[in-house]
Length: 134
Image (cartoon, rainbow, N blue to C red; front, side, top):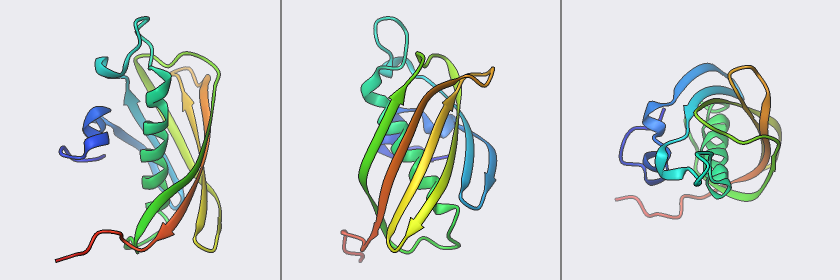
């Protein structure tokens, strides 16, 4: 889903993620937990979960646009944990609202049986690209 060379993407091995479903305002992706982000019990270390959420939310919002218009800043990220995240899992992510430059995206983490492992709601804001282009 994300080519090699993206700092957060490389950390989570997003270059191996598989897009299962894609539509306007919706992404469903199969991902996994790389060894480098596991806690001593072999589970996803909770502090890395928001990185998954942030990445999938950004790409979910991009499905609503033919051509990205600017930069997205994360204003808020709420995350609830229900079960440990291990091995392979799916992220089902949807744009639930857009008002002006603000966008709300929800993401569910699901095990292979469909059990919800975690749930997140992210608020993004479209901004001007902070980096000058040459």
